[in-house]
Length: 320
Length: 273
Ligand SMILES: Cc1cc2nc3c(=O)[nH]c(=O)nc-3n(C[C@H](O)[C@H](O)[C@H](O)COP(=O)(O)OP(=O)(O)OC[C@H]3O[C@@H](n4cnc5c(N)ncnc54)[C@H](O)[C@@H]3O)c2cc1C
Image (cartoon, rainbow over the protein chains, first blue to last red):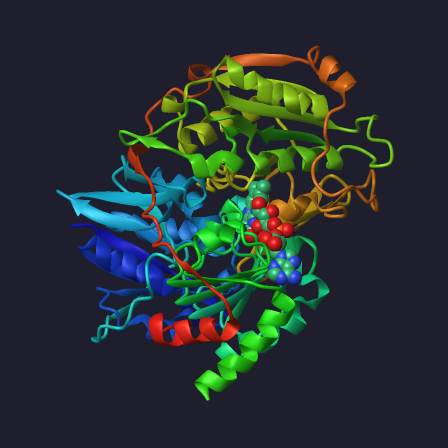
């Protein structure tokens, strides 16, 4: 039975919801788990994760960890992992993917990235993970006594609280890495948005190159009506029609909402890799042979500049 | 500046929807090989950092490309030499001998000999999609890392300002060299890379192609071979792949003929509204 250390990711003094996917991983793997909340303000944030059935919630609250710099986080994560854990689990967010290999390196541990499933087979954890842009799934095992994994947010649904109150315990900041001295954090620039995060949204309205400069004017009314997050293809981001952080795909965000609209998106494999897991997929494209129709539950062959405004009108009627 | 770029060949991703699984293994016969696109972006970035964009023939630094694989992977190295890299190293190995950790450990040993100022790597290879070698390498070297770089600015070749593409936006970091930087897609946009040699050059979008003359000339550039065992003494893999399978197929969808029909289906059939 593995003892798992779940790493909580913090943003603006709170635990990011993406962390709940790593908790689900820990529950699915069986055994026991604790949650390590580290960052500035971790002490206050720890209360957010005491109701998930963790044996302990470990806290390292230090201004040194105010910003997500892998070289600053990895030493403490590795030190805590050495206090009796078999598996270190993060969610495969950009933070998780940045820091997890460094932790594995420190522990001499094998690292299985971006996993989509876990099973305990006679005391050995067997992982599943997508490869080739999700065109195949690999089964793998890690050969080292301590293991590090990152869990795909789109495949491990957010854990719900299970009640109880895990005891909270402080842990010390580990000795600093010399490498951290050579990194200066200058800041995060993000387009402020009231919309849900792509990883957490129930509905996503995604647009492609076809939208041109009218990306926002066409898609915003639909997204607003549905309380949806907005996503984009690489071509739309590269052309500057949408900000880069909206990119969905193999090399952007991997999402699995209940409802995904692909509007003016051709459906290249790299895009499909990021949204194929969505529950219901709607495609609007004027090309009847666009590959996106092969994964769409409902396809509409139409000019999006007419169809999207009409969709907004009809949805308003239908939802009252 | 001296830059080392690890380069991997992958099965052509545009053929990837034809990925076949045979008896729990990926069928590689008949697949076409291509350099991993992110590694090509890393080579392009390295070239941009070591030249004046207006006069790229005069090389103002050194770019070393390294791959792991059998003899035939030298094609990938020659391709990079033809676009402007100065020398190439092939670490002789078979796929079965490699995982991300062995690659990182071997690169560490090589880097201790070659002493580059910067390692530029693709953020992931599009076959295994593992996204780990750059970070592991940085850890093993005790160097700082800047992953998922969308922009790089080198003012004096001593430090880089890197714009990292992260989930919520862009994180800007200043990294003192030597360091490991892994690159994302938009690093090959026209003005994503700037250096003291060419602070404001506007490149064409994407990576450069080699002229025929350069392809001929690249045959004379140095390409050396090193045995994997000369770099890593412990050959144990940390991860074992035991099988592959195709993803479950999605149930075939339907085409609707009008927007009202779409809304009706979403409401009563998919119950998605
Ligand atoms: C290494 C690598 C990584 C990549 N990663 C990603 C990734 O993460 N995410 C991603 O999305 N892509 C990625 N790509 C790019 C991908 O291969 C495609 O180029 C991209 O997804 C295409 O975007 P698009 O569908 O918006 O544009 P296009 O392929 O140009 O498609 C536009 C579509 O709009 C339709 N259209 C045009 N006008 C209208 C209209 N008026 N009404 C309705 N439909 C219309 C067209 O029929 C067409 O199907 C990657 C590529 C590489 C090489």
